[in-house]
Image 1 (cartoon, rainbow, N blue to C red):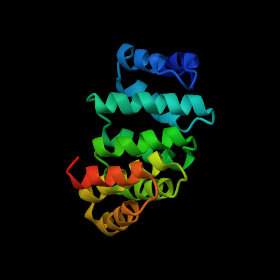
Image 2 (spheres, helix red, strand yellow):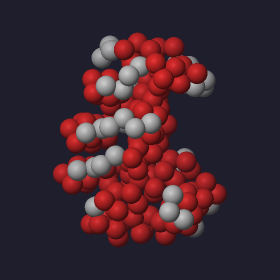
Image 3 (cartoon, one colour):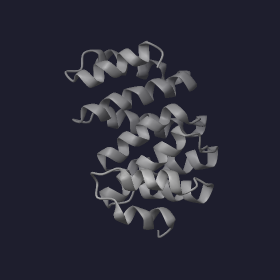
Image 4 (cartoon, rainbow, N blue to C red):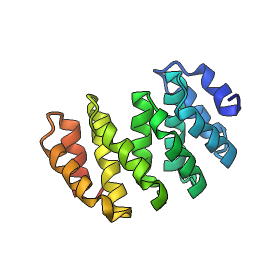
Length: 170
């Protein structure tokens, strides 16, 4: 896929966010560009996946709307998202999107897989995502409670801190 986002991400080195910030501010998050970001989330080139999901997360946090169809497209590619930072960014997006019931199971599986990661921040945001999913879809409440309980005992301070933020209403 070669669209405006793919082209702009060619300058991303994986360390400096100035390119990503320029993309966030300089490219309008219209539906075709949001779709491109979703496709790039599963790109085998880690830097493309990481950069695309960073920008997607920033756009969603800034108010861009992922409609039900876009969330469905994201749900379908979740199993192919391999880059850890890309996975973390998707976990962070869950709190800001409406996941239709027909796609909730795909997100639950993805988040549970991320929760098993050796990377603490990925585990922390996976727990957050499971909690948010359970709020919207109560059938995942037991899973979310188990995840929260385990996260309270996680050896990583960042995971325990995310649980405290969830419990404080963040």
